[in-house]
Image (cartoon, rainbow, N blue to C red; front, side):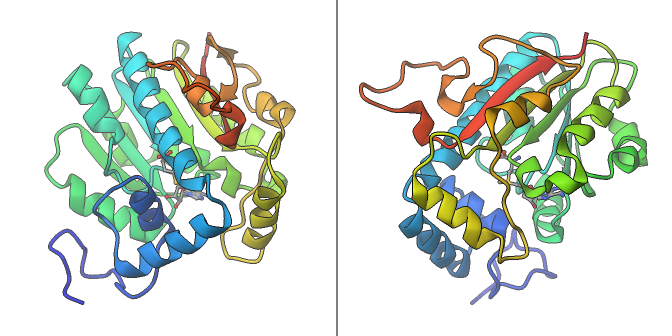
Length: 268
Ligand code: SAM
């Protein structure tokens, strides 16, 4: 196939990428046939997955908008994926053009696409790093060059810590992030959960453990522990569509159908 202008030269167009599959579910244009085929396969096994991803992105938009209303202008987006449909800097800079956003992802494909998309976009930067390497991230010269660590920073950890096994202490990662930012900083976090989920979701998780990127579904109690030392803002840790919704849930809609919990918290 011919290479679209937005696709970096080092990207293999014949291998699916998790970040582009996610982009496809969001209705984005940064994906290829190979990604779409994989997405359709996943959707045939877990029909609610597309809705959950879109609900996650809608949460991101509401949370970032709310954070800017609270006076936050600095964002550290960890596990950012490809910044396409409704990305953080567009939402934040629409509300306040002074907002600055550093996107961090471990996946070289996501990073490569991000660099291509964000080239020349004021107030943004991209860093390739693993969320587990908190100290490297917060001391990275690109991060320090854009974000002022003497002023509040919103740390976004959306849909990323479910790729981190318990043995790597996800709650400890969030704790180290808390220690790295000043008081008044905020945390937004989303993680998939196994609570109230149908058997096919649990089966899909088992399948994922055979891939290079297993997913770890977590209980409400495990996710609440990730907020240790932070103060959750209303409405607390809730299913994605229940966090400060702009419109009421449709009649008969079950919030548990969106198999992820979300919360926003403050460092006092
Ligand atoms: N945060 C975005 C959102 O919520 O819309 C994108 C979420 S996407 C489902 C998950 C992203 O996390 C992927 O781009 C993946 O490469 C990244 N990721 C997975 N493990 C990671 C790690 N250990 N460190 C940094 N990023 C990671």
